[in-house]
Amino acid sequence: MNLTLKIWRQKDKNTAGQIVTYQIKAVTADMSFLEMLDVLNEDLIGRGEEPVAFDHDCREGICGSCGFLINGVAHGSQRGTTVCQLHMRFFKDGDSLTLEPWRAEAFPVIKDLVVDRSAFDRIIQAGGYISAPTGSAPDARTILVTKEAAETAMDAAACIGCGACVAACPNASAMLFTAAKITHLNVLPQGQPERDERTLNMVAAMDREDFGSCTNHGECEAVCPKEIPLEFIAGLNRDLLRTVLRPRRQALPVRGATLPPADD
Ligand code: SF4
Ligand code: FES
Picture 1 (tube, rainbow, N blue to C red):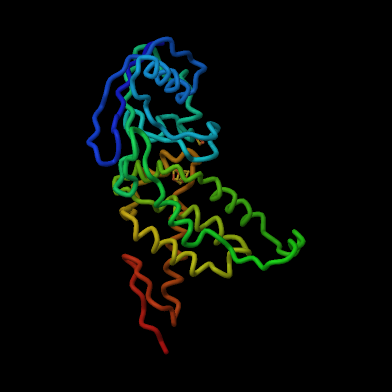
Picture 2 (cartoon, protein in one colour; picture 1 turned 180 degrees about the horizontal axis):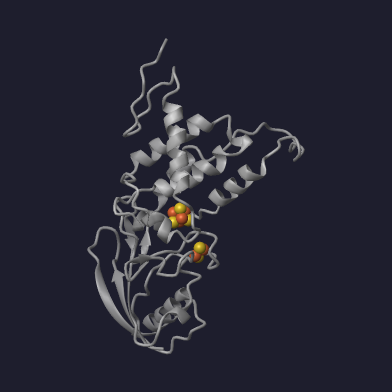
């Protein structure tokens, strides 16, 4: 099939970008979307032009590196699919596709379709860990985990940190990502010692980046390639409320959360 690609080209974060149109021929139905871009890039390199920069690594939907907007939809219109797993059989001959990077203040464009998602790393660094005593590994049976907790933690751990939720949200909110990372540890017995600090610190870290607030649009859930549910955001809000309402807690700068005065 032959396609028209309108791709955002931007030299670096200090240079203005623009949409550039390319024609690509002989695309086969069994190519992945990224393989189709590889073909375009080989053609561009052969003509002495700069190839299109895009992020990728595993190409099997597990690393979270890839992602851009296809005709305005994060990862394209196939539900539960990363752009690396999207195949060209979902498109037809003559289609015109517009590819743009994630659009969010917190994700500045580095080049073409590549954005800087290190804001996510800083949220993880703020609380995405558990305390573990040194020494030999404990027997796996010493800490019992309920089936419900294990399944919820696994569902939350499916988040690959791709950033599609932020790109789709009209507020560029990172609540779905942060909720998945907090839920992953907060529901497990091993996550209980730092549960309050984790919740506060990760929400505060999210607040320090340029993400917007959640106003329950649900666009994040709709585009998430791992189908992380909105209910995790509700769980995060419950954890945050319970934590900030505990007495003797020192105030942390969490926007929208009013702390009661310490009672001692
Ligand atoms: S919640 Fe979904 S869309 Fe957001 S970063 Fe995680 S996997 Fe990507
Ligand atoms: S390249 Fe790893 S998820 Fe797409």
